[in-house]
Length: 427
Image 1 (tube, helix red, strand yellow):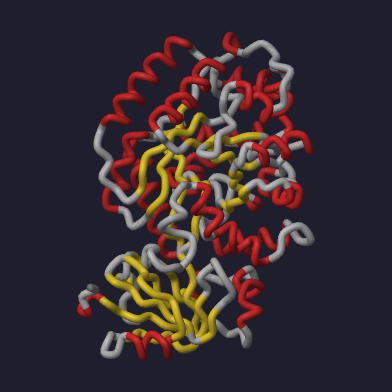
Image 2 (cartoon, one colour; image 1 turned 180 degrees about the vertical axis):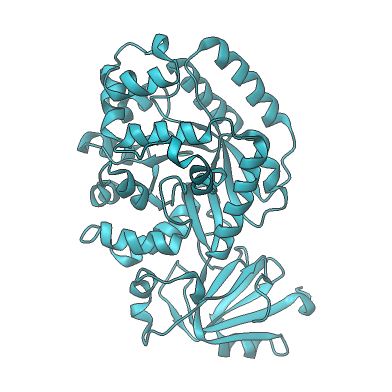
């Protein structure tokens, strides 16, 4: 039997569970950190008389967002760039951007990444994000997550072509995975991309994830340069990127394969491996992703900023690929807000993805992509009592999804609940 002192009813003008149509004058009955009933406010008050009610009359309750792909350790990138500003040229393309990123990160101390990560977590939470798929290259910064109010997966990034270096990386990675990680997030692995990791090491990471039941994340088909390098071992990645980091002697022989086929060959097409970007995919690759029940995080603002192209969203959706939404990092984006990402995606994918689909990418589909769909992504009985309350000037429930993608700013957020506890004071 539920203890009445732990119960509370939270209601609003509209309730968007993400799993069904919006409910006018809907409400949630929460018992500590779980939702125990979803109904109209009238029905819940009748069934549970005496339970405290928080009624946000002119507002809408909706799930916390899922940022399925980000690099929060790069949140201070603009600050770092300003400090080095004149020493670095503006990028003119994808490889220019990578080289600029390397230059700006050069010689940063570990505290810089920890501070940036803390800033990224704070910005994400303020923008209504509750779940992240965060790529972490500096593994020691993971301790920042111990008290962080975010769920999801912290993907420990790894890459390398030098066999001697890879042996050291493997040892350190296995040791890290054996250490306790007391956070609401769980650890996963991210072999960066087919163009930055050896064939053998990539196989090892995929086998490790499958053997230990770890979530995985791989950047794939982000740029034309990646396609050329993966297939032919030539082009700007070989000539400029590998030269810049002194990897010339590790350029692999041509595989003759496009990135997705290459991942299939090394065992990378399994549902727990979240793919990212997928800008340059042909029909055969799209069908292959669908058959393997893959998830793909789209990062439209980052893709537009780096001028790498647009993901074939409609064809991916039609093939059954589970699409999620990510902001990528502040090295290639203006904000960590999924509200902003949805607004841009609605225009970027106009005619391909409608507003309800984009909202689903930011909620349930994103949670499913990270393996946390049982707890997050929608507001149904049994799920976490974590959600946001935003102002709702629209007149009808049928207009809500268009409102969500219309360019809502963080100021529209009235309250944020995490595990049943309101986070914003003075409300």
